[in-house]
Every structure is written in C-alpha cells, then in structure tokens.
Amino acid sequence: MLTDRLPRIALGFFPTPLEEMPRLTQALGGPRLFIKRDDQTGLATGGNKTRKLEFAVADALRQGADTLITVGGVQSNHCRQTAAAAARCALRCIVVLRGHAPAAWNGNVLLDHLLGAQLVFSGNRTREQVAEEVAREEQAAGRHPVIIPVGASNEVGAVGFVAAMEELDSQLAERRLRVDRVVFASSSFGTQAGLCVGAKAVGFTGQLAAIAIDSQRSEVQMGVAEIATPTIRRLGLELELRPDEVVAYDGYLGAGYAIMGEPEREAISLVARTEGILLDPVYTGRAMAGLIDLVRNGEFGKEETIVFWHTGGSAALFAYADQLRAGVTHELLSSSSPPMEGQK
Ligand SMILES: Cc1ncc(COP(=O)(O)O)c(C=O)c1O
Image (spheres, rainbow, N blue to C red):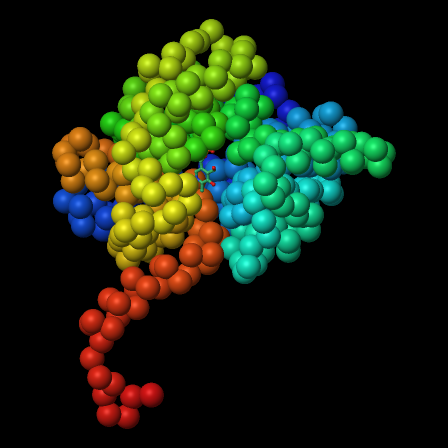
C-alpha cells in the first residue's frame, strides 16, 4: 500500500462498505448511484476524519504527545472524532470551538463533552490564536500538547484519503465496476487532496467532483494543490497535482457555512426516505443537493455510474431538529387522515 511506511494507528472499521442506491437512482431517473459509507467508520458515530486521524494521532504519539488540541465549529465532526480518538489512546483532548458556548448542548458539542474533551470557545478571536495560547499554557504546566489543524487537513492527515482511494479502487476492481465520477463535500481540502493524490497514484480515471461547501472554486483549487504537494512528498511519489486539475462545483454555497436551506433539506429527506441513510445538514446534505441538481440540469449524464462519498456528520442533525422537523411536520399534517375508531 502507498501509505505503508507511515505511522498509523487503528481507529476505525475499514474498508467501509460500498453500496448501491437503487431507490435513489430510480427516484432521480438515473444515473446509477453508489455510496461509499465513511459514515460507518465506527468512531463515535463515524465520519471522514477517522481516516485522517489514524495518521495524525499516530504522528502526535511519535512526537510524544500527551494532549491533543484541535479546532472547529461548534458542530465540528472533526473535533468529535478527535475527542474519541484521544479517549481511545489515553490522551487528553482540548477542542477550541468558534465563537461562544451554544444555548443548547446537543449534537457534536454534546458528544465532545461525553467523550471527555475540554471545550474552549474562541469568542471574538481566531480559533488558531486561542489554540496556540492553550498549547503554551499546557507546555507551561509540563505537558506535551500537539495541535492538529482544522479538519486534520495537512499532509499528515491527507494521506488517510490516499489510502481511501486505494481502498475504493480495489472495491471497484473486485466488483468489476467502472465509475465515471466520485462526488463528495470539500471544505478544508484534506479529503479532496488525499483523493486526488490517491487517484493519480492508482491510475483512477473517473472524475473527482467536489461540491464546495464554503469556498469559491479557485480557493478550493489552490487549497487542494497546497496540501497535495507536501502529501506527494511525504509518500515519496513521483507526481504533481496542478490547481487547474482540481474539479470543484461552487454553485451550492447557499446562504453560507452551516446554514441549511431547502436544497439540503430536500436531499436529506430524499436519501433518508429512499435508502434509509442519514446525511448531515452542513456537508453531505449540501454535497448531495449539488449532485441532485447536477443530475437534474444535465451536467451529470443519466447513463453514468457515480459514487457519492458519504463523509459522515449525522450527529449534527440533532442540532437542526427544529428546522428539519418544520418540513416533516408540514408533510405529515398534509397527508394525515383522522384517527380510525379504536385507534390510540
Ligand atoms: C461530514 C463532513 N463531510 C465533509 C467534510 C469535509 O472534509 P474536508 O474538510 O477534508 O474537506 C467534513 C469536515 O469538514 C465533514 O465533517
């Protein structure tokens, strides 16, 4: 394997399943859709960060870490998985979350707390400034903190998605499947950088089509190339990834990061009701909404075979309960009939 030389610890169940989605395919009238279930990595409700953390935490342990510090939004899936990884490795964990303590402790922020992480809110300062300050305090107390960057999106974490691409490639070969595109959410670019490097390394010929969650296309292209270059070096590969080779659709930014709109709600509901699979309001809901729109507007052909990479995040659904329920309640009310005689 491409990543064999690098330190790695086991945190998840791999390979994650690759499943067909026949009912969603039918609902859209094609293309043929598959889903790569990284929501099933097994680490405290799973997600894509498990793959990156297998390498990032191993690297921190190699540096002698006794404390992991990382940063994210209040509903960060990355922080929740880092907290779980720290618990498994008997490390302390401090997560620095953007802004102020929320009014309701649910979803990922509740899980951070249950998993034993210490929570620090950055207030009006940047999360990175606060994380550096926390690291200095830890050092002053005689501890050995290591900061894992947002999303574990650097060359240390991104190799997890190089291994992931190898994993998908061998699943496709086993099933003799040829795939036209792989569609996924991209935000801090580490997932995409790893997939792009892995694709080149294994000779995957399908398109890697990112749905940008919170950046313009040019930012995604630069950000992915910036992580890919040191990732290639770290793996000792003879490759190059230019920004113009990076594919990103930036037409689905909606009202901004973590603001769920009607397209995300429709995508979450459609996938739940056709396939019994839970997406999330911030990343996979938006990425699936993008995929659905690109199918409807003809950019993705109905004769294609497409893999949607489920990167996790369903724990955040509960933080959006009121908005999600608003739509559901409406549908239930409009289709409900009066209770039958004797029905409780
Ligand atoms: C559920 C989920 N999907 C996708 C992403 C995007 O991954 P990346 O930050 O590596 O682009 C994240 C993290 O930000 C996430 O939590």
